[in-house]
Length: 250
Image 1: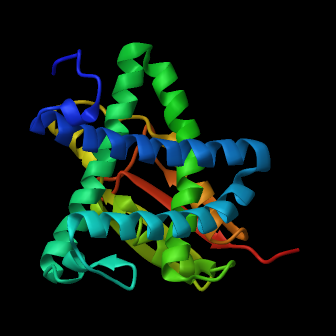
Image 2: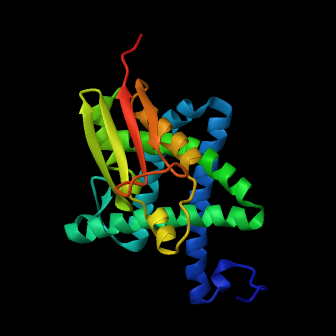
Image 3: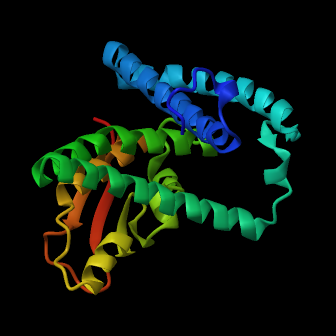
């Protein structure tokens, strides 16, 4: 691109298209930075409460404007092209989004690792999960309209709607009315390492943060116990396993 260009209107077609993508990225990042600053000043729970309002309003405004520019209809807050897409293609799309999410997670991890070291990458990863995991649980509860204390049944439902559920093979075993065991039977990351002859990636520190915070956001009464997670030894049928128990309030 000619770096002497002074205004977007002077750009060539290809660079105009690149600018559109860059502006989407700026909007997304600004959205995240707003949330982070509200969290910093008001706390995580209050930030989620405000996000609920801000996201709904912003989504409506942006979708309305984009639909006019790109000439697509909107029905009940959803772009009509999505509503008219075959179910199989929609499911393929959510699978692709799950894989893209995991790829993005891996890119961030490696970018930190190659810029500094593995220790910093793991530290950033684990800390990131303290925020993303409860956010994802909140987002799923919002989508499914689950109650504040959704219980074990709510957790079982929420676990099936995680981004990870579109990437890995998982199973849930009922132990009792108030307890389940969640198994990650095939993990995309660990299976890839296994094919390459590498040891399991030691993900237990992130997993404890991830699953504990997810379950707690679904229902604050749920206790999380790690049955096994790399670097722990594990059977061939799963890479990690977690027990969730609903405890009565004292």
